[in-house]
Image: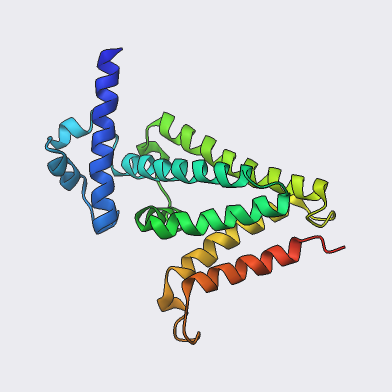
Length: 210
């Protein structure tokens, strides 16, 4: 038991070292050799704790998502209507990544690049998938609550809406934090205004006004 605990602590240390390098240099620009050197161990020793860069990437990405989900639960559970719960999700989504740009970069990298699951420890991917399902459940439950409490339109297709909400927020946030994509067409660009105006538009579209 103690041996497993020590091994887990060493793995966590390596993950923290890798996180610092990924956040500073970017995932693609960091080699596994650099991670091992910064951790003060040989590459062969590192491989006794992690399967490789992909394993480190998913572990770090998972830790970031775990922090975000904790904040989502606090904020969403503090609201009474489905409408307010969904809006709270949008607020947390922006604020978390605004405060944690390193996690945001990994989040976007994962969106546009495939990670080889064979190079990730099975239990990490399982936990990662479980967390994703938890996020989906939070959004879906908020839509269901909103329809039941009358704060959202009663003819919404929840299976579509939760996906519309999740995917479009990711795209809008990506653009908001990448002003070079829009500054040439938007006068006096403001990333917060860009993001929250979209969130307001989406919420207006689903709000029950009857």
